[in-house]
Image (cartoon, rainbow, N blue to C red; front, side, top):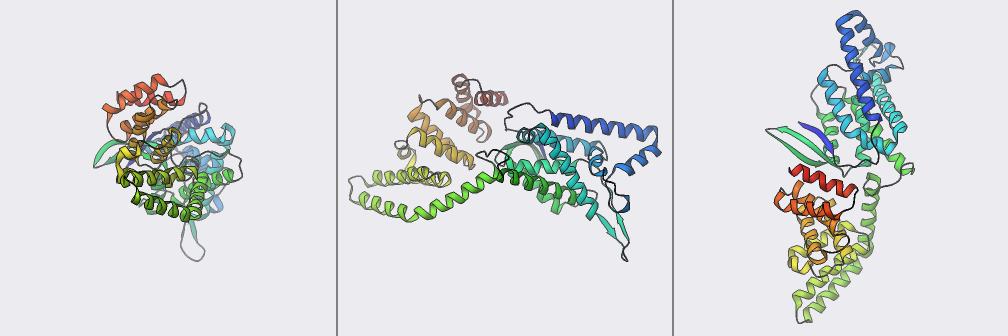
Length: 391
């Protein structure tokens, strides 16, 4: 079992709608439980009127009211936890009123699919429609939007599976696992079709809003990542012949040079620089890893400019290659430790040691130095947050 605890996404402004939705839903549940105790008949009538169900019992308001009812405390707690974790970043991107409209539309879309598709067919046109309640469909829409808008964001999770521990995993992996579980989940009491409809609604709507430029494009949203990957493929195809020629010329020069090993390393560094100049970050990262493996850190230490060294380290970090990213950041600090970007590089290296390589001894001095070097802002706040995690 994976329980989300939070994300590393930084909000531009405090969340208002998400806490309000959590509060209203909790109050609705308290009222629902109180009425069930005080007047069971009234409770039954209210549930029949407010749960979403297909067929003759369907009423339009059920698409919304069903999202504020729950079948028990654990049902409520699980839904509100997911909303609390994934709602604020999506609200930050949609805007407050836009997020409220999106949340209610996600509830309506998932509820509508449930009303249409969830029934038992007894033949001869006899159908019994299955009622449903809960905010799961609306929250699935929120997590579907999160997957499009922030796929590379890291999610802090609590894992219960033979061992118990807290881990950091990419958002695309965590949400993708939740979606797959809706296809294979064994519990017949869960409205999986409504969940999948919610995911699809949030995913598709967010992609459309990015494509139509209603949302400003950001470096790591799903559409931008897809286009960058397509552009990198084009660059690789367009410059494969050129790079091959450069490599052959470098190899011939290395063969006749007094120090062939050094010249071959220089040719490998040239490949890294060319990839960066072509904005092919993935190819640059792969070439840099080959350079490290074949010629060692000393060969990588003497070539790239501060800007290129920083970029290739960032690309390795984004790809999840934390070991080689740490090497690249370390090489940067050895060569350019007084550069203007050195504070941020210390932050990134300390973050890798603390969260991904389990090396708090190396992480702490880097983060303390970064915290003092960086001006007030998100980077300094992140350095202080990771230091706090280290205790």
